Length: 388
Image (cartoon, rainbow, N blue to C red; front, top):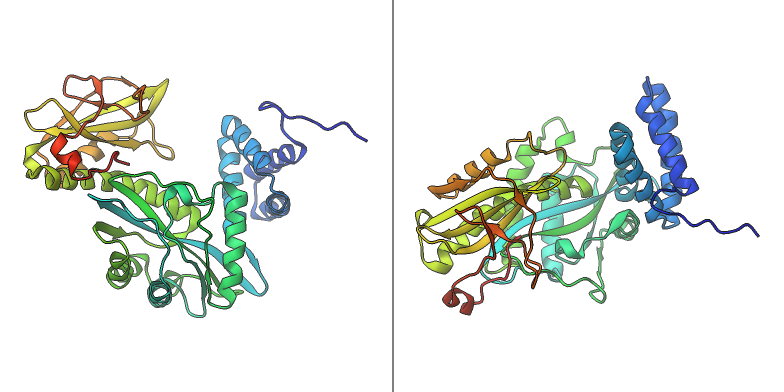
């Protein structure tokens, strides 16, 4: 019997090594004809690894390429995501769809089972405004929090396959609540409704793939027609529906949109909790570093008061770095929320957290990082603990 190999973070498994080699070949390819061979080999190997549950090996390959070859990393990440969110179905092209909902509330944002009536209504609205003709839909019956979304490519592929079975019969997948992670309690957060959609081979999936459709029109109709039904299932929340899209793409779009939405939601929450106008608030924003710029943090206080009441973390996403004008985007968002007292610090702040509770510390006007604390009267009204 051959001796079992043990892998360190510096040594790739055999399949991970081949993934790296294939991805580099695709990145260096000089023609679509050559691309096709590399992509077929990659797709076959990725499918085998997903089926065998080789999550670690997939991530090993991605980590190696992230360090050494950015273009090959992007190519491989795209193909792994595509394989994870595109379950196989005889005669149909299937795709795992995410429907993000931005929400903020003075109370707990729900993560809950979705009633059959709501799922039926959403299926009708999807077919009317988001999906092309002849597309079938299988839906999950849970309003997912980010903590409850499938973790990793293998778990995503398995959920997509289960939903694909439901799509053929236009059914709903019952999600077991046992074992789901506990949802964090935030003032502003994202919720997701998940489905698999399937079109006949060679036919489009989305309304905007048809000659008289567009993404903008689809989003407007989705918000107008599906919004009231979703709102009814999220009492006490202000919500904004984003465009349903492929799972990983929708997740990235939601992460990006949630940053500004959290600032606006924070300002609205503090106005309601403290009975203040927007002009009665001050916001202090600063960049936070851990060897490199990692995120901006925004602390909120009463105007004329040094106490930081709440804070929002604005993480850098994708290719954003120190050369991205994040400060201007944050300042513009705060102005749109009605704030007039805005302090933009240019000091390099250290990435600090509270030693007792682990919460991030937020900047005050003196460029110190401090713990955010609401006044006792607001806490007695059941204010959420953190902002997302």
